[in-house]
Amino acid sequence: EDQVTQSPEALRLQEGESSSLNCSYTVSGLRGLFWYRQDPGKGPEFLFTLYSAGEEKEKERLKATLTKKESFLHITAPKPEDSATYLCAVGYSSASKIIFGSGTRLSIRP
Amino acid sequence: DGGITQSPKYLFRKEGQNVTLSCEQNLNHDAMYWYRQDPGQGLRLIYYSQIVNDFQKGDIAEGYSVSREKKESFPLTVTSAQKNPTAFYLCASSIETYSPLHFGNGTRLTVT
Image (cartoon, rainbow over the protein chains, first blue to last red):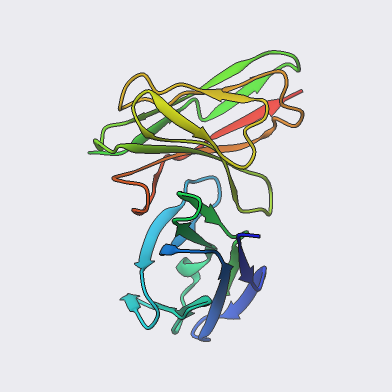
């Protein structure tokens, strides 16, 4: 079955405490892996696209990496304003659509 | 500014009534999508359209209908056949099928 699994469901960190979020996928014909940030009551905001294993993208305190079966979103020295739900999504050619994981709720304490 | 506009932000309906959610984009994107989000869950695909006058069912299409008569517009109708319609509905668009999605800010529908 095609699916995207994110872990952990929730993560609480102290300000400055680095960590990683995981996104594993089982699909045929990966066409792109996407990371989004979602604030409460808002639509998701696009962060990164990764297309092939070994690829990395960075933006401020965030760095996304991709292997053949999973992606990691590394957050370095997070600040309280990084608190949000982070969603992973996968586009794949066997179904011509994009499916989402259930997200990781990240909370950064000052 | 280019973007996606969903209206209204909040919508209340009585059980048994059909309701239509609006989605308009001025990004000149070909592909448009409707997702549903329930508390603590990810986004589930309802319908998507890759081109005007064509659309496909997503994973949870039962009880919903769409139309794509114009490139800019992709309205979603929640019918009385949808058993659990209360949810947060998100519309998105992309340049093409596997490009990053641009989202609107959602419509929260409450049916009592």
